[in-house]
Image (cartoon, rainbow, N blue to C red; front, side):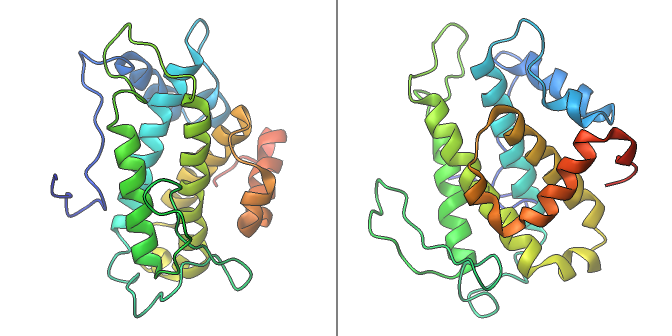
Length: 220
């Protein structure tokens, strides 16, 4: 297994020039760089929805890997003995394949299981085909929805348990920008049910209000 870069939690998933999705990755980066978050999440004209979902799933995984990588010293089994998103929400780990009975584990263990599971999905060529011309499986959208549901839980834990650490690192603007992009994307393609987003419902509502009223989009 690859060794993670010290600045990231898991090795970043790259899309090379000769692989499918490279052009869409460039489009995604350009539109995101323009500062127009609404444009950044929209499916580009004439492009395949599954290709767009695949490229962005990889980019969101990479973003969260980098963000959580800054917090590993603060998120240990001793400091975060349960995987939670505030007092009302505790997550037990089960992937439905290797682990079918939900396990109560620390936040760091849970996130390691979660990110490893996502990494395995992204590296599975039958789910995320790299070669041009190979079709996406019929189960692709359902897998993507599970990935986004689980990635959200990492954001929820960061906001509820580590926001003070994020502020100490002066990363709050970066975190908010990444999360707003994440929320706009899952909202655009209806990838995560509202009940799953409940731990950060108030923050999400603020971001959505800015989406509906662009004049509010000053800063994040």
